[in-house]
Length: 168
Image (tube, rainbow, N blue to C red; front, top):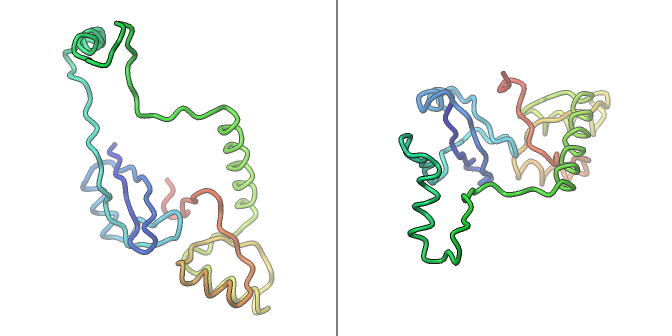
């Protein structure tokens, strides 16, 4: 698997995409299968990424630690720890995010995915052309502004949603 940082052209939203290979990414992009999970924009590009360079496979982790201790001019003691770029998330925050994700999932279970047709569907429900029912989908920033100006009650989802056609 390969991970690309992606960015949508309309909203500038950055997100990750996992692909079997660079070729898989290119094929999915050409077929229009990649959408921004935030705004639904289908014009997606690779964002600038820093390479992920691993340690040499013939080097033991103790060699790396010893090497770092010998060459690190900022180390005041020989007691160094490996460095990682992962952010430590407090347990309370993780619990809150889990509850938020669970609540959103329950809401979406009772809601119909309408994709890019969201603005039209929301208007039809608002103006009584269709029966009221919960829907979710994608809308551009311009569509959102127009819906709000018309008094159509909408709200953004707090967490990204993977469109059903993109799910495995």
